[in-house]
Image (cartoon, rainbow, N blue to C red; front, side, top):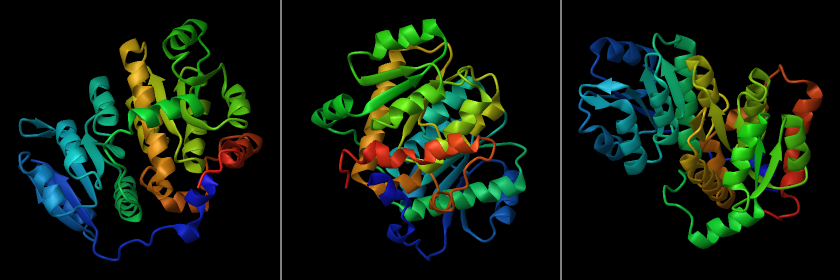
Length: 328
């Protein structure tokens, strides 16, 4: 089964034993000195020229990039977006003060950052973030930045479910109007109702609002990502809490983020992109390790705040999700 391929450590690619390469992009000499000390066990390549950063990432074949949000007149999100196109193998991290909602949206939706790091940073968390990004970059091939063909997308829309969790009746109706008829959709008012459907149907995308459960739902999203790294999530959030947004990126690893109240024009493009990502991982299962470190999958370090019965249901989804499809 697909999920078994992802979780089977015996099939995991062997990490490259060469020194790990990490590109840091900042104008701040104090930040660079601190990073040099913090990551002294890695091969740190410093860059203060935003015009040279993307080419340097590609020419040095770096494993990960940490970019300051402002590098002279350039914005870090723009640099990471360029690096994503030119050197997609590198995992991208953004270093920022408490960001504005627009920055959070661009960092996730455009640059597809692996981690958000706020200043002042936590030393242990910074070391863990670098190690996770570097290992993930070495353990799995990058996903293609090219979209699947029109035929593939049409097949995905018809056969792989999009599950929506939204407890607000008015918002759910808006989502129904936008999505119904274009996808194989299922609407639920709670995670429990969504899981009942997911236990019986292959689900490629989960669309949910953090207002439908708040902390409990975010914790469940973390567990889902650990057990099913191939599942793409699109989250609707008010973005009034930078720490919660960072939690959604760094731990739940959401694929797309919409600000509540959401822009209807973005809904279908984001769902299409999420389905394309699911399809790409399905064709190349080991690439799922790029969206969640392999060590976490093998160790199954799932969140402890979830009730054991709910955690078991989440972990038990793969066999029922993919058995009927006969996924390679």
